[in-house]
Length: 261
Image (cartoon, rainbow, N blue to C red; front, side, top):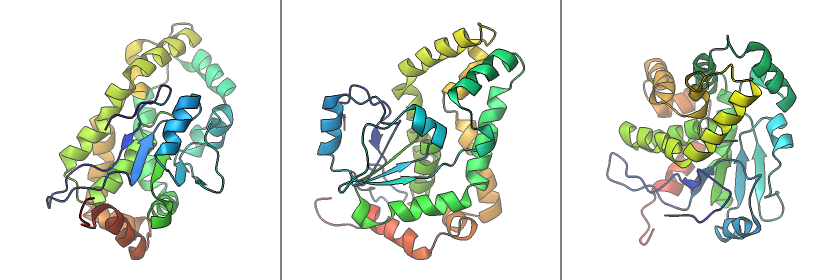
């Protein structure tokens, strides 16, 4: 489905894909996107029409302060704010600019991204438990999960949910990589800005690992998860200590075969 937002990129439905058993994940249960800081008045109206009851914000406090959401929690929308970013990597906007100017020629942006995925997969078990249990409550759907760009943190969580529900790995990867198309124009502008702020000491090739999703980012941690736990269900239940009841509710919301859904 095409959602007609003017200032909200990378917005899409986590459902609509088919599992290995031939079941289709329900649409309209869980959406994903970038942050909600630039919505137009029409975007806000379009957002309200989706009847979203809960928002899971994966951004760090500094990101939330610098890019304030235009959709605030209230009687009709519940908010869960839980960061799955490495707190040691948290920069204020000013600190990030200083970082670019002082260390732009030596920093390995690809390593930063790989370390980030490693942290999300193995350093955020408590946060994953909180996120999954929050999203598995039927009273909170439709729900939205988002970070800043909607590609890495949101992409990781969405991929784990789809894999747990039985979506084939290659389908999950295709969904994960769609971010590159949906945010290409925006990331090109970001690339130009970052290069300018670094006094052009950062090449496009050097900064690109941060501005796009790559199969190997997710695949590396996925293989480690499978080696350690055997399957995603065990990873969530044993690794992240998510109660079986939450996981069963997630299954029920996405896979229960009611006619017309």
